[in-house]
Amino acid sequence: MLHRYSIAINPSLELITTIKNMKEQLATEVGWFNSKNSIAHITICEFESSERDLERIKKQLERICDTITPVPVKLDDFGTFPNGAFYIAPDTDSKEALQPVMKSFHNALLVKTFHHSDTPHISIARKLTPENLIKASQLFTSINESFLCNGIVLRMLDMQLKQFRVIDAFEFKGLPKEVQGSLF
Image (tube, rainbow, N blue to C red):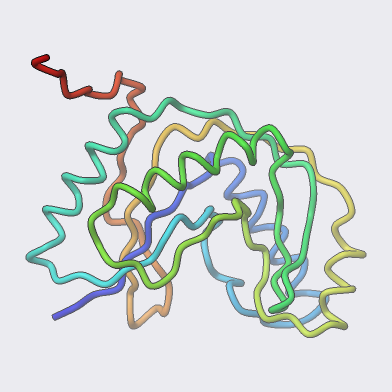
């Protein structure tokens, strides 16, 4: 049986709590919205896999994480996507540091993904109406938060909760990449 999985970056527990409170504030203003109950994260990709193949994928994730160095992330802006998403954005330096991290999973993970993100962001809400996007933009005008991106989490979609839940975590170790030598 295939399950749906997500690879994501989780911010610090303090920041997860802050964002949960922001989502509650927004819900008071606009009512329920998509991703209201989702725990704050930066999506790298989503894929489907059997439980049998999952151990192989975990080994790949471990190998990829071994060579990634932790990245400090500063969140300093809000943004929207045309699909009605309202999100927290990293500053330019953080975005430029996170994109190669995300790309390393896109390029090295040997699994067919059906969704991957190239734009690092933490969603507050998804599929908001234009009116509710305006309300969100008026409610949240400034942010200045930071965290150390020092690993990723593997999440599995819980079909009853209709939410992803963390099933494993992988730490960035910053080890040198193995280079295949030449005999000549």
